[in-house]
Image 1: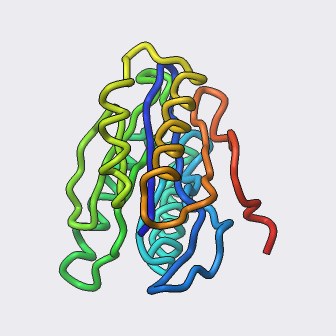
Image 2 (image 1 turned 45 degrees about the vertical axis):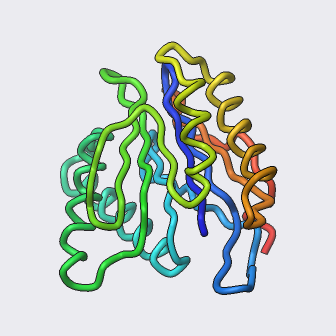
Length: 200
């Protein structure tokens, strides 16, 4: 029952995810961070069981860090990171699949902000905006109506806020807190959150 949202703007990407950790009829936490940094200028929003969420994001982040160490500090582009993620999902599909749906966003100097949509079956597509989870039934129409190529950061965050408000109004499942992160030329930073992840 996770929700992950993302939208591109002129100069970057906004990634957001609910902060609930729930299974069956029980909510364990409402302050976890499902938007993980992969590098200084990229992050991954993941929807799925908490065990796969943690395992997959750590596996990808550590392998990207290892690649940089083995190649004299060379950083992979956002597109290359997305294709690496896709290849690992495809490999796992025939062994022990990760039950994760992914939105990967990043900033590259020559490209600007870019966003990639992946599902647990290892489908990959570059998109301007995306959403995973049941809440996509409410959010995709809002994003489709309000998205423009020339959005600035504030307008992009406002669209995400509009989606979150609609989820709080319409969605049957209670997802009280959301983590919103911005990725631009200055790197990955937290814009706002409902529950502090450091408060364990």
